[in-house]
Every structure is written in structure tokens, then in C-alpha cells.
Image (cartoon, rainbow, N blue to C red; front, side, top):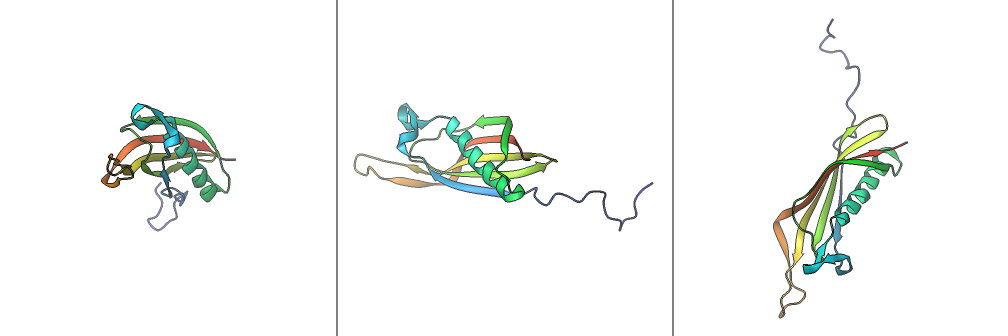
Length: 139
């Protein structure tokens, strides 16, 4: 038996799905971990935790707890002196679990020279440095 076209669906779509959180962060030189002022990949994962926390606060009124990553891709290096844009989008909401897509984009990068030690440039387009999908649980 099929429902009449004007009948309400059994479950309404979750209006939280599609919610986005965006943070911007300057990467200080104190976080350089490798030669060439490279920053370790764990730095991006820490930023994903920050945006996931804000997402859970906004959608559930609780900080939530990170449960797992199903995919992490390190696509380009992050350097000290970069300006990063970190995004999080809620893609699925279960009873207690929240699946989120994450990305780190390098939107500006230091371009120091001996003549201009503080030089930097805006990257257009931004460079995708890290992507991931993760699951957070809330009470």
C-alpha cells in the first residue's frame, strides 16, 4: 500500500544535516615539527576536533566525544605561517552518532624573502591540505 501524495512522511528529514561550522587559524611557528617549517598531520586532526566540538554544541547542546575517523587524506603540506580555514559539515545524524565531513584549506601562506621577511600571499584558489570523515557521539 502506498501513502497518498499529500500524506506526511513517516520521518521528517533531520534539519541539522547540512549544518556547517568554519574556523580560521594562523599556524604559529612554534608548531613547526619538521624541516622547512612543516607542521605534522596531527595538527589538522586537532582542528577537526575543535570544529566538531562546536558542531555538537550548536546541534545538540553538548560537546560530544569523537568516536572514529573513517577516512583521512593528507593532500598537501601545512607550514608554519599558513592561515587555515577548517570546515565541518554534518552529513548524517543518528540517534546518538553524528557523521561529519572535514576539510582544511590553506587560504594564505608566508612568502618570506631576505628582503621581505614578513611577506605573505593569499592563495587563490586555496590549497586543500587535509580531508576526513569522522563520527562523533553525543549523549
